[in-house]
Length: 495
Ligand code: BG6
Image (cartoon, rainbow, N blue to C red; front, top):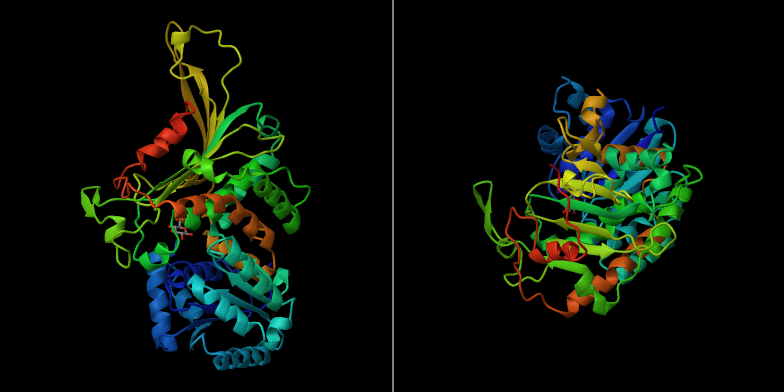
């Protein structure tokens, strides 16, 4: 069933996120017949496009970034008629009347009142200004149809996140606010709930009695990709750990929901965030490692160090790598470490979650028979491949006893012919349908900030003396290896 009529305004309409992600996602939804019968998309920006040049600009993005190129002749032409451009200065309150005008006009055209969606795909420092000028518009009082989508980063620290939440709450009802974290829209991430709670097999062993530790790696090969000015006020901990990685951790660690109600799922996740042990400042250096990439070579190509990137300070203390060891203080997870790491310019693009099980309680085979003592692990791969691997010990064929681990693999590519939707497709459709399950609630955002604030504060107090401290194409700084090696474990990468 298609969603109800929707009028979508995209602030940052001429920006990168719209070009790479939002427009391609809306186009794919259109091709798959998921867009409403009646809809319009209005890109809002300062740059002087007209409708024709704006559509051309977006079309380039489809060619480059969409999972579907223009492989259905004529479809882009039809779709682009629903796309228009509104040049406006979002800092000038008087100009917001233009939006109210468009809503009125479309309402008359559709013969009904549509969903009015404001997507804030803008730099974080612009969000509050736009929200405070949008809020007073008449249409925003409509708590049923008007929605506002806010991109991460949601605030810069706990204090600014609380302030932004307060501002949003003074203008909108919580159910109108969609705080987006695109990781939650990924198929493989959504599948974590299916894996855990639609099977009887895993849940009984999904706890401290059977699990040795958990790892989450979100490694990227790219650098900051021209986003130096944004990254200078962010860093890896804010950009990836506060949101994406903690969300993954919640999916792995949460208790079973009673239903698929949006608040039920979000309650279960927020419980995890509350239970994460807050690091004491003096313990930060022992449990968290930061890094920054140097100049070097990747795949026979020379790449700049972070401090040489555009709009980056020559002595920047900003982290492009972060690794943290967390503990969750509850009955299920007491004493089970969660090691997480993320970084730019690392060896491979790899987003994986590893659940490492304990060793067999008694090993009756000759000790020299096994290559490894800890064979049992479940690896959930989110990127680059989408698959789940269960590793167990097997006897190698031949005389004598030699054991080595083998993998049982479920791969999306082999199991399904359907192409999986991009995260943004799923999330935009959810916004049109009014389903907030995969979006972050106010208290989740705050709870996630509370987890990382001690680390941020400790890092702010002491300048990193050894930056840059990892080479491009590596797996990060040596200290990150030490963080896990100290506990007799090591980071897992895909074979
Ligand atoms: C974004 C970060 O939220 O996620 C980027 O701001 C990062 O720095 C990106 O590159 C990674 O997303 P994905 O889906 O490619 O893992």
